[in-house]
Image 1 (cartoon, rainbow, N blue to C red):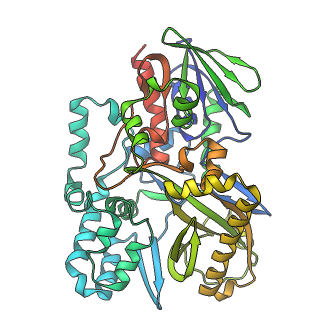
Image 2: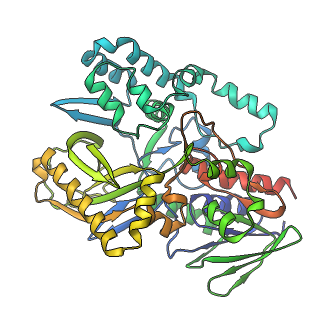
Image 3: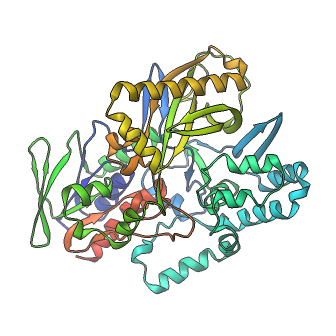
Length: 493
């Protein structure tokens, strides 16, 4: 076509857009503000250990799905790549009782019913609804925001089996969902993984990703995923520029005529795709009048659309011993501790030992990830202005969590090394992430899912690709958004 595309942001959406643009015949260059690509799909090496920042599980690892074909096209998955499938979504250990949300749904149903026969009706309903939600997959063929009526009906029909679960749990919070159960352990299991204000459907749907065999972890983790995408991008002729932050966008007569890098470089192209955080684009670089109405609505109603953010600490395990630790994600009750002014009495941790290329026996990692909300973000943002107090608070919380893990698993005492601590503002600094979000908006009870167009009204050659184009976005939505932007760009020429 002889047309040039400049992409801002080398995260998953940006590299995806780059690959699809190259395959469509465009010449492509990507500009990334950081010295390394990947955005929030990244990891760090600390003290000889690896910290994976992003992938707890990747949806689209089932060969029978369209998502698998998208990942395959992007170089993320191949027949020769090892895939790790976890035996359960997460488990809880409490008073010597262990409950698992097994990937084998019927195995989990049996375990839960044996523990809590008094909840027979509600438990069967939960597992039945999880089964019906196995049909739900993030769309990757067409953008929901751009679908015509026929495409929308077709999408609805592909997920018609999910209607029962949506009707049961779609308007309930986790707190309301928990109150449907009588058994103390069942209530604790469901109460202490997601925040109480999360939509209950998000818990059931997340579990369904495991029972449908679509959730897994490709070898190499987050860094490996991005590395394979970049290899595909560069093999097609794409160019990547690192360490260049875009500080100005020049618009003339509804066209972007150039963008300016912080190094003084004036960058010109026929088309531009913004693949970084959209909040920074609309509130720092161009006029708010260009803001998509659905995106504006979510920004203007933070009580209904909460950004998914967290405090995180990573520990290295300083031994090669087999410590008989649980696999994957586990939650357990513990002594109370405070995070951003809130009191917690459960601890969640994840053992990273599944990938020998990243986590050999002598370099296993444990991470604690505490979900945070908008008010928590404000706390961390204020504290960041007092850097010594900010660092002290992160370290205090790391020490509190280490002590609780060691109390639960005495075999770890004296064997945990703090590798790094990260607050919500860490991700704002790293990626300009809106309120530190590692995933897009989480709609609360009474608020509907919203979808954002790839086009920007009033600008003819600037497009949007990001996990923020819809609620509950993550890696599949980010990757698909890159494809959507190129599809829309081609159709508008």
